[in-house]
Length: 229
Ligand code: C5P
Image 1 (tube, rainbow, N blue to C red):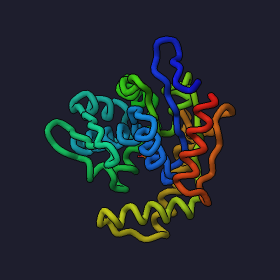
Image 2 (image 1 turned 90 degrees about the vertical axis):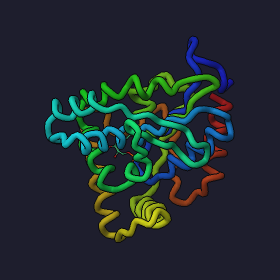
Image 3 (image 1 turned 180 degrees about the vertical axis):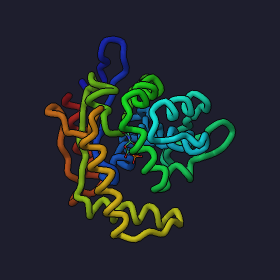
């Protein structure tokens, strides 16, 4: 059954895929439906990016980034269907976290192996009973390789750019489709071609293309795969 644990460890559903594929929404819905905890690992990388910016780190230098990360502590607070609230020290950075500028810095520091290692314990600490929905790029391959279910959720670049534009607009952030498509494309390439923990669909993952599927169908597919896992 899907709710069995691996050894003493609570079960994990790992959801990996490119940005804008709907992972965040799907992960949140799954967490609510199953009563599981939620790890938005992108938020962990984005918080690291804000820390680098605050510390004026040289993001081309691994040692500069690492020493910035040692200076500030980010904390993550679940807000139910409202996503995660992120604090750095006593500053609420939840809104800044979602900007394209921060996504870009996150994606640049995420290529560094030492940064990925430094963020591992933080991510694994989210694995608590009764279980965890982990959303990211390397949840099934690196962070939780023993996950009960691994899902690779993707969608076409155009679909993802449209969804991102809508999300940003709701937050009052204006952008153009062409610049968004170009940014998503560049970030995909960097995430998929990097040497450490590249974004790839592993052989044991359930592959779901959400371009023409609504959220309910995606969630249903994953819950039924988890029940059979
Ligand atoms: O998912 P999100 O767009 O918030 O992630 C921001 C960036 O953080 C990604 O483009 C990727 O470079 C990095 N990331 C990662 N591994 C994860 C989650 C995010 O490298 N597990």
